[in-house]
Length: 117
Image (cartoon, rainbow, N blue to C red; front, top):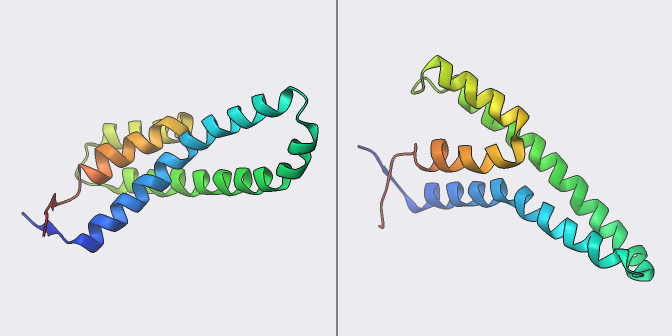
């Protein structure tokens, strides 16, 4: 079985962090909204441009991840056709939860054996 070098492992871990970011961001966004609801008008006005930029970047990242993982799932010949289609549907319908799950189950676990070299 092929082994994975530290560069490949680092790339996959970075991809995993990017895959998990939208889930983390949703929680942070809700905290921000709740914190500014109670009269934090000045803080909201000051932070809104930053939050908007992070929100837009997260949305674009999410779209890129869904499309990339859907292409990966639909072209992965190691999976049966029905499972490929299921992953494709899950990624488009339940993307915020399906993206980290797909990364863990199909990209991280499905990659060659990790080594500690």
